[in-house]
Image (cartoon, rainbow, N blue to C red; front, side, top):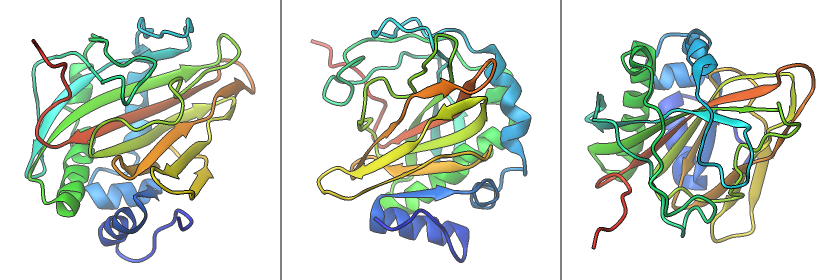
Length: 246
């Protein structure tokens, strides 16, 4: 895989890198250009990460993760929310938490209606639609805060994984007083990989989930109240992941 960088027109450069290497990174200004979101959207939305409830479903016994969950359909680049629903993954994609019908608190309504947030959903949906030839995406929205209250926080306690969707976007909202949190991306069926650290609010990592696996290394405190805030968006064609009912 080539180093994660973009040159030229942002939408076409992002599309080309996703096609050729299965992932790409975006600086905050590039995500803004790609999605037509207002500049500094991430900074403006950081307040919503101060009100995330503790994740009650962690199977490793930790209390380092806070989150909410929401679901949208993005059709022709236009997002619309759907009624609050569970988050579910099969064990083939998440050995630690797969098979559980996990119900998280819903998104703050003000976040769900925010123009910049909706621009991210719509713009990324258009980009991914150009690559897959898909008009409608089923999108799950995960605001995460990983903190270092217990000494170590694990952004991906399940380890290197795929999510069982078509595309994943990880947008950094903020990081404060921490070490670590390095993103690692590897070819799903090859030897090559890369590693880097998102540091700028509004910067993003885009992943073709069928082609790469990813993880983020644990974070450790480097001052008081250390934490890493991200917005994870998963885009899936054909429907949301749900358990098979017998």
